[in-house]
Image 1 (cartoon, rainbow, N blue to C red):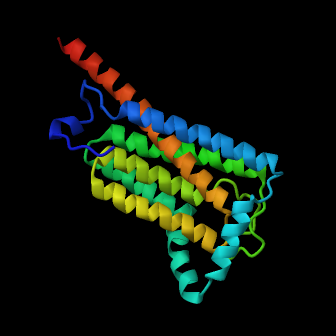
Image 2: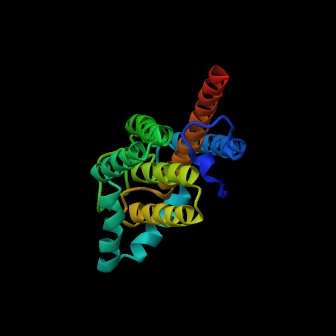
Length: 226
């Protein structure tokens, strides 16, 4: 989904659509289906950890060391509730300042939606975290909110800014977040995978929806000017 475009294509009101929209819709749809499927797999297991979850948790425990714990806490803190609110608000403000209101709306709406989906779902499923959790104790393990919000921001910015380095740095950050949450035993592996899928689905589908809205508005403005 990386493309080079001219400056005119980055204007907040332009009458032509983005060629990446079908790809985003397909990718978001697949992620949504996989997320729902994983959610039902967890429910069918009685919210108990899957075999792969236990294997991964044991693997993380075998690699535990003080340095690793310190490193793991960095994304856990930065990607926490306060950190993500600050990042989300700051990003939205920056886009508003540079007069890109559609992009500001995309980021703000995507973050709000992923939280509105993930937080109630986690409370309903009430999946217990690993017994040796170093970071969390409340039974709201599925899906991983840290991973979901991190993925949402990364995918949203990747689609908006259209730069390879944004995708590369963002992917590294999401992987680090997923590792951090499982290394600290705050989540099972399936929790962070679910967060990843939720973030991809929300970010891509929200971007595509706002893209349609933006194009139709621009077309109406052009029509009214003629």
